[in-house]
Image 1: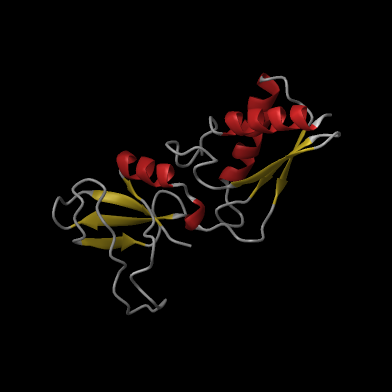
Image 2: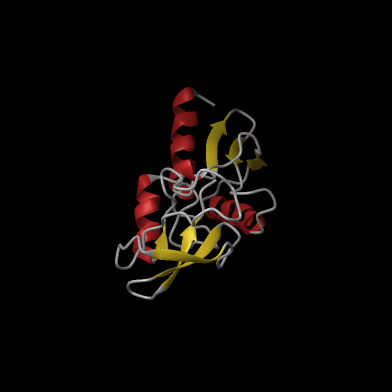
Length: 168
């Protein structure tokens, strides 16, 4: 395969991946979520390297299947999906577009810096902005939200509950 063909195939695969959404956060593509680390094309196959948001994430099997199905629909069958655990995924890998999509969907995006410096049972809750009314007057209800990667918060001003995509 020529370099030109390899580049075209790589671009094609990235474009397909941008249209695959996380099953637990359906507003985010797997690219905007930052779990797609790389696409490598050589003469034998194409390799898609993915990193789960946390080890044991139940959505990864569905994501792998959705990647395979989307590529097969476009006639790309010789593709391997490899899971990479190091470096560990971090919320820093969520694109700015992805963070805006989370907010528009009603999920507070991860803070760019933690407002709580220690993991202490007596530490104050992290200051999380309500995605609806933009108030920081919020409180943690549960460290676990609708999925393990989110926490449940409530706004003290508009009284609405919301998920917060936890930093890690």
